[in-house]
Amino acid sequence: MKNQGIHKALEKVDWRKRSYFMRKFQIRTAKNAHILAMSDEEFLKWADRQTFTTFHNWEQTDEYFELYMLYMKGKMQRDLEAIYDVVSEKAKQGDEKAVRLFLQLHKDMNQLQKSMNRTQTKQEEVQEDEDDLVL
Image 1: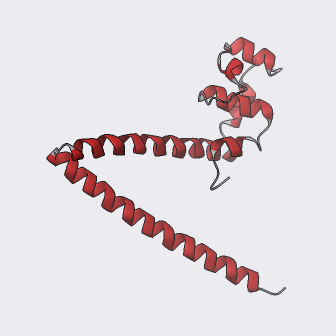
Image 2: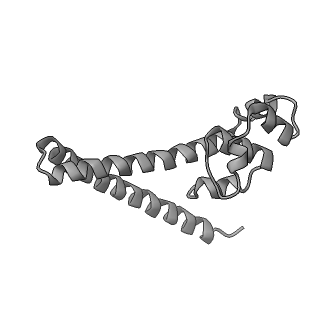
Image 3: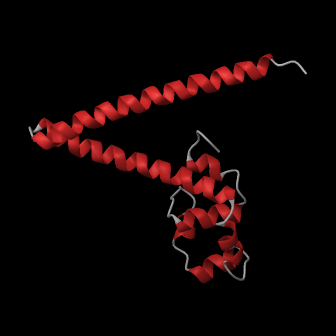
């Protein structure tokens, strides 16, 4: 489920689990507003379940954890963008602390990008090595 958005990842999940996840985290789509507005009882009836036990057990699985981490990654990216916009605007207005923070954010982002590029290059090298193997 790496390198894809939460919506794409959820397409691969059973419809009941997908609906539960989207309802739990209020992930909106063009077609699910009615599910997000359901009470617990209405949702269980709609999903043809008696209790939430199946869903709560699913929350303990790797599949759920990967979806959760993907969801949180997207949420953190949106939050970081909002923070960046606020810091950038204050820095443009001459706020000294904001200028320092803006410069630090820029430096950290560049370092992160370099680190990601190195990781990607290593992954590509490993992939090339695996492609050259003859069985």
